[in-house]
Amino acid sequence: MKALKNDPPTCTENLLAMRDTLDILGGKWKLLILHYLITREKEVNTFKKIQREVLGISAKVLTKELKDLEVNMLVEREELNTKPKTVEYRITDYGRSSKDLIKQLVYWGKNHRYKMLQSK
Amino acid sequence: MKALKNDPPTCTENLLAMRDTLDILGGKWKLLILHYLITREKEVNTFKKIQREVLGISAKVLTKELKDLEVNMLVEREELNTKPKTVEYRITDYGRSSKDLIKQLVYWGKNHRYKMLQSK
DNA sequence: TTAATAGGTTTCCAAATGGTAACTAGTTAC
DNA sequence: GTAACTAGTTACCATTTGGAAACCTATTAA
Image (cartoon, rainbow over all chains, first blue to last red):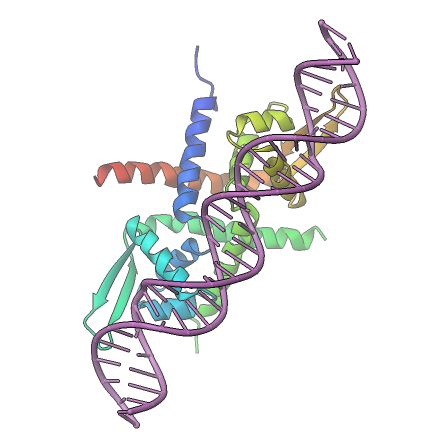
Protein backbone atom coordinates (compact mmCIF):
# COMPACT_ATOMS: atom_id res chain seq x y z
CA MET A 1 0.00 0.00 0.00
CA LYS A 2 1.45 3.25 -1.10
CA ALA A 3 0.77 6.42 0.80
CA LEU A 4 -1.18 9.13 -0.94
CA LYS A 5 0.13 12.62 -1.14
CA ASN A 6 -2.05 13.83 1.70
CA ASP A 7 -2.72 10.68 3.63
CA PRO A 8 -3.84 10.91 7.24
CA PRO A 9 -0.40 10.55 8.89
CA THR A 10 1.09 13.41 6.89
CA CYS A 11 -1.99 15.43 7.51
CA THR A 12 -1.79 14.85 11.25
CA GLU A 13 1.88 15.72 11.23
CA ASN A 14 1.06 18.98 9.53
CA LEU A 15 -1.70 19.71 11.98
CA LEU A 16 0.63 19.12 14.90
CA ALA A 17 3.26 21.38 13.38
CA MET A 18 0.66 24.11 12.92
CA ARG A 19 -0.47 23.69 16.51
CA ASP A 20 3.13 24.08 17.68
CA THR A 21 3.49 27.28 15.72
CA LEU A 22 0.21 28.66 17.00
CA ASP A 23 1.11 27.71 20.58
CA ILE A 24 4.41 29.58 20.38
CA LEU A 25 3.51 32.53 18.18
CA GLY A 26 -0.27 32.69 18.53
CA GLY A 27 -2.30 34.96 20.76
CA LYS A 28 -2.83 38.65 20.64
CA TRP A 29 0.66 40.03 21.11
CA LYS A 30 3.61 37.79 20.29
CA LEU A 31 3.77 38.34 16.54
CA LEU A 32 3.17 42.04 17.03
CA ILE A 33 6.12 42.22 19.41
CA LEU A 34 8.36 40.24 17.06
CA HIS A 35 7.33 42.45 14.18
CA TYR A 36 8.16 45.50 16.26
CA LEU A 37 11.57 44.20 17.29
CA ILE A 38 12.40 43.21 13.72
CA THR A 39 11.47 46.56 12.19
CA ARG A 40 13.27 48.46 14.97
CA GLU A 41 16.31 46.23 15.07
CA LYS A 42 18.73 49.13 14.84
CA GLU A 43 17.36 50.89 17.89
CA VAL A 44 17.81 50.03 21.54
CA ASN A 45 14.42 48.68 22.51
CA THR A 46 13.83 48.87 26.23
CA PHE A 47 10.86 47.59 28.16
CA LYS A 48 9.21 51.00 28.44
CA LYS A 49 9.87 51.85 24.81
CA ILE A 50 8.20 48.65 23.67
CA GLN A 51 5.31 49.23 26.02
CA ARG A 52 4.82 52.75 24.69
CA GLU A 53 5.00 51.76 21.04
CA VAL A 54 3.19 48.45 20.89
CA LEU A 55 -0.07 50.25 21.46
CA GLY A 56 -2.38 48.98 24.14
CA ILE A 57 -0.19 46.40 25.83
CA SER A 58 0.02 46.47 29.62
CA ALA A 59 3.15 45.94 31.70
CA LYS A 60 1.90 42.65 33.03
CA VAL A 61 1.17 41.19 29.64
CA LEU A 62 4.36 42.55 28.11
CA THR A 63 6.43 40.96 30.86
CA LYS A 64 4.79 37.62 30.26
CA GLU A 65 5.03 37.76 26.49
CA LEU A 66 8.70 38.73 26.55
CA LYS A 67 9.46 35.89 28.97
CA ASP A 68 7.69 33.39 26.71
CA LEU A 69 9.59 34.68 23.67
CA GLU A 70 12.86 34.49 25.60
CA VAL A 71 12.21 30.88 26.65
CA ASN A 72 11.71 29.99 23.00
CA MET A 73 14.91 31.78 22.04
CA LEU A 74 13.17 34.26 19.79
CA VAL A 75 14.18 37.27 21.87
CA GLU A 76 17.23 38.14 23.98
CA ARG A 77 17.15 40.10 27.21
CA GLU A 78 20.06 42.17 28.43
CA GLU A 79 20.25 44.38 31.47
CA LEU A 80 22.22 47.48 30.61
CA ASN A 81 24.53 49.32 32.99
CA THR A 82 22.51 52.48 33.11
CA LYS A 83 21.01 54.53 35.89
CA PRO A 84 18.15 53.98 36.19
CA LYS A 85 18.57 50.41 35.09
CA THR A 86 17.25 49.73 31.62
CA VAL A 87 16.76 46.40 29.92
CA GLU A 88 17.20 45.87 26.24
CA TYR A 89 15.24 43.31 24.26
CA ARG A 90 16.59 42.19 20.91
CA ILE A 91 15.34 39.83 18.26
CA THR A 92 17.62 36.79 17.90
CA ASP A 93 18.76 35.17 14.68
CA TYR A 94 16.21 32.52 15.34
CA GLY A 95 13.53 35.13 16.00
CA ARG A 96 14.23 36.46 12.54
CA SER A 97 13.05 33.12 11.16
CA SER A 98 9.50 34.33 11.79
CA LYS A 99 9.96 37.03 9.15
CA ASP A 100 8.37 35.12 6.28
CA LEU A 101 5.48 34.08 8.44
CA ILE A 102 4.91 37.66 9.52
CA LYS A 103 5.15 38.79 5.93
CA GLN A 104 2.39 36.37 4.99
CA LEU A 105 0.21 37.53 7.86
CA VAL A 106 0.61 41.17 6.86
CA TYR A 107 0.03 40.38 3.22
CA TRP A 108 -3.06 38.30 3.89
CA GLY A 109 -4.56 40.92 6.16
CA LYS A 110 -4.08 43.70 3.63
CA ASN A 111 -5.47 41.54 0.86
CA HIS A 112 -8.46 40.63 2.99
CA ARG A 113 -9.31 44.24 3.64
CA TYR A 114 -9.09 44.94 -0.06
CA LYS A 115 -11.27 41.94 -0.84
CA MET A 116 -13.92 42.97 1.66
CA LEU A 117 -14.10 46.47 0.18
CA GLN A 118 -14.61 45.01 -3.27
CA SER A 119 -17.33 42.57 -2.33
CA LYS A 120 -19.67 45.25 -0.98
CA MET B 1 11.36 65.14 5.84
CA LYS B 2 11.52 61.83 4.11
CA ALA B 3 9.89 58.75 5.53
CA LEU B 4 12.14 55.94 6.61
CA LYS B 5 11.63 52.44 5.30
CA ASN B 6 9.91 51.29 8.48
CA ASP B 7 8.50 54.50 9.84
CA PRO B 8 5.73 54.42 12.43
CA PRO B 9 2.75 54.78 10.03
CA THR B 10 3.83 51.79 7.91
CA CYS B 11 4.54 49.86 11.05
CA THR B 12 1.07 50.55 12.44
CA GLU B 13 -0.50 49.63 9.13
CA ASN B 14 1.31 46.31 9.20
CA LEU B 15 0.27 45.70 12.77
CA LEU B 16 -3.36 46.33 11.92
CA ALA B 17 -3.16 44.00 8.94
CA MET B 18 -1.67 41.30 11.16
CA ARG B 19 -4.42 41.81 13.72
CA ASP B 20 -7.04 41.41 11.00
CA THR B 21 -5.48 38.15 9.90
CA LEU B 22 -5.24 36.85 13.44
CA ASP B 23 -8.84 37.88 14.15
CA ILE B 24 -10.11 35.95 11.14
CA LEU B 25 -7.78 32.95 11.08
CA GLY B 26 -6.47 32.89 14.65
CA GLY B 27 -7.63 30.67 17.48
CA LYS B 28 -7.33 26.99 18.01
CA TRP B 29 -9.30 25.56 15.09
CA LYS B 30 -9.79 27.75 12.01
CA LEU B 31 -6.51 27.09 10.28
CA LEU B 32 -6.75 23.42 11.10
CA ILE B 33 -10.18 23.24 9.47
CA LEU B 34 -8.99 25.15 6.41
CA HIS B 35 -5.98 22.88 6.14
CA TYR B 36 -8.26 19.88 6.36
CA LEU B 37 -10.65 21.14 3.69
CA ILE B 38 -7.77 22.04 1.39
CA THR B 39 -6.03 18.67 1.63
CA ARG B 40 -9.36 16.81 1.26
CA GLU B 41 -10.71 19.01 -1.48
CA LYS B 42 -11.65 16.09 -3.71
CA GLU B 43 -13.81 14.41 -1.12
CA VAL B 44 -17.29 15.35 0.04
CA ASN B 45 -16.67 16.77 3.49
CA THR B 46 -19.76 16.67 5.64
CA PHE B 47 -20.19 18.03 9.12
CA LYS B 48 -19.79 14.66 10.81
CA LYS B 49 -16.82 13.72 8.65
CA ILE B 50 -15.02 16.91 9.58
CA GLN B 51 -15.88 16.42 13.22
CA ARG B 52 -14.52 12.87 13.17
CA GLU B 53 -11.30 13.78 11.42
CA VAL B 54 -10.33 17.12 12.90
CA LEU B 55 -9.45 15.39 16.13
CA GLY B 56 -10.84 16.75 19.35
CA ILE B 57 -13.28 19.32 18.04
CA SER B 58 -16.79 19.31 19.48
CA ALA B 59 -20.02 19.84 17.54
CA LYS B 60 -20.62 23.17 19.19
CA VAL B 61 -17.23 24.58 18.36
CA LEU B 62 -17.23 23.15 14.84
CA THR B 63 -20.60 24.78 14.13
CA LYS B 64 -19.30 28.13 15.28
CA GLU B 65 -16.00 27.92 13.42
CA LEU B 66 -17.67 26.89 10.17
CA LYS B 67 -20.12 29.77 10.47
CA ASP B 68 -17.29 32.24 11.01
CA LEU B 69 -15.39 30.84 8.03
CA GLU B 70 -18.54 31.06 5.91
CA VAL B 71 -19.15 34.69 6.86
CA ASN B 72 -15.64 35.49 5.72
CA MET B 73 -16.17 33.63 2.46
CA LEU B 74 -13.44 31.12 3.09
CA VAL B 75 -15.81 28.17 3.16
CA GLU B 76 -19.04 27.29 1.36
CA ARG B 77 -21.95 25.41 2.87
CA GLU B 78 -24.35 23.33 0.85
CA GLU B 79 -27.23 21.19 2.04
CA LEU B 80 -27.33 18.06 -0.03
CA ASN B 81 -30.50 16.25 -1.05
CA THR B 82 -29.76 13.10 0.90
CA LYS B 83 -31.63 11.13 3.49
CA PRO B 84 -30.69 11.73 6.19
CA LYS B 85 -29.84 15.28 5.24
CA THR B 86 -26.13 15.92 4.96
CA VAL B 87 -24.32 19.22 4.59
CA GLU B 88 -21.19 19.64 2.58
CA TYR B 89 -18.51 22.15 3.41
CA ARG B 90 -16.06 23.19 0.72
CA ILE B 91 -13.10 25.48 0.62
CA THR B 92 -13.71 28.48 -1.65
CA ASP B 93 -11.26 29.99 -4.11
CA TYR B 94 -10.71 32.70 -1.58
CA GLY B 95 -10.18 30.15 1.16
CA ARG B 96 -7.40 28.72 -0.93
CA SER B 97 -5.59 32.03 -0.55
CA SER B 98 -4.63 30.90 2.95
CA LYS B 99 -2.50 28.13 1.48
CA ASP B 100 0.79 29.99 1.60
CA LEU B 101 0.12 31.13 5.13
CA ILE B 102 -0.65 27.59 6.19
CA LYS B 103 2.45 26.35 4.45
CA GLN B 104 4.53 28.81 6.47
CA LEU B 105 2.86 27.75 9.71
CA VAL B 106 3.55 24.08 9.01
CA TYR B 107 7.09 24.80 7.94
CA TRP B 108 7.87 26.95 10.96
CA GLY B 109 6.41 24.39 13.36
CA LYS B 110 8.44 21.55 11.92
CA ASN B 111 11.57 23.65 11.91
CA HIS B 112 10.97 24.68 15.49
CA ARG B 113 10.68 21.10 16.63
CA TYR B 114 13.93 20.28 14.84
CA LYS B 115 15.63 23.30 16.40
CA MET B 116 14.49 22.38 19.91
CA LEU B 117 15.84 18.83 19.50
CA GLN B 118 19.20 20.19 18.44
CA SER B 119 19.60 22.70 21.24
CA LYS B 120 19.33 20.09 23.97
C1' DT C 1 12.05 65.58 50.96
C1' DT C 2 9.46 64.83 47.05
C1' DA C 3 8.63 63.63 42.46
C1' DA C 4 9.89 61.14 38.44
C1' DT C 5 11.73 57.29 35.71
C1' DA C 6 12.71 52.30 34.70
C1' DG C 7 11.37 47.59 35.19
C1' DG C 8 8.79 45.11 36.87
C1' DT C 9 5.10 42.24 40.39
C1' DT C 10 0.70 41.54 42.56
C1' DT C 11 -4.16 41.58 43.19
C1' DC C 12 -8.48 41.62 41.59
C1' DC C 13 -11.72 41.32 37.98
C1' DA C 14 -14.22 40.66 33.28
C1' DA C 15 -14.58 38.63 28.97
C1' DA C 16 -13.51 35.29 25.68
C1' DT C 17 -12.74 30.55 24.71
C1' DG C 18 -13.66 26.08 24.82
C1' DG C 19 -15.41 21.63 26.70
C1' DT C 20 -19.26 18.15 28.23
C1' DA C 21 -23.48 16.46 28.08
C1' DA C 22 -28.11 16.55 27.19
C1' DC C 23 -31.52 17.55 23.88
C1' DT C 24 -34.08 18.47 19.25
C1' DA C 25 -35.78 17.17 14.64
C1' DG C 26 -36.15 14.59 10.55
C1' DT C 27 -35.47 10.17 8.45
C1' DT C 28 -34.62 5.34 7.94
C1' DA C 29 -33.64 0.48 9.19
C1' DC C 30 -35.01 -3.38 12.20
C1' DG D 1 -42.19 1.27 18.31
C1' DT D 2 -37.28 1.67 18.98
C1' DA D 3 -32.77 2.50 17.83
C1' DA D 4 -29.48 4.87 14.95
C1' DC D 5 -27.73 8.54 11.96
C1' DT D 6 -27.03 13.51 10.52
C1' DA D 7 -26.80 18.19 11.82
C1' DG D 8 -27.06 20.82 14.76
C1' DT D 9 -28.65 23.71 19.55
C1' DT D 10 -28.69 24.68 24.41
C1' DA D 11 -27.29 25.01 29.15
C1' DC D 12 -23.83 24.89 32.24
C1' DC D 13 -19.17 25.15 33.74
C1' DA D 14 -13.91 25.59 33.87
C1' DT D 15 -9.93 27.50 32.04
C1' DT D 16 -7.43 30.89 29.72
C1' DT D 17 -6.53 35.42 28.53
C1' DG D 18 -6.16 39.93 29.19
C1' DG D 19 -6.80 44.45 31.42
C1' DA D 20 -6.62 48.19 35.29
C1' DA D 21 -4.64 49.80 39.19
C1' DA D 22 -1.81 49.68 43.05
C1' DC D 23 2.50 48.56 44.72
C1' DC D 24 7.77 47.73 45.02
C1' DT D 25 12.81 48.80 44.43
C1' DA D 26 16.47 51.49 42.89
C1' DT D 27 18.22 55.77 41.23
C1' DT D 28 18.42 60.59 40.06
C1' DA D 29 16.99 65.41 39.77
C1' DA D 30 14.90 69.57 41.87
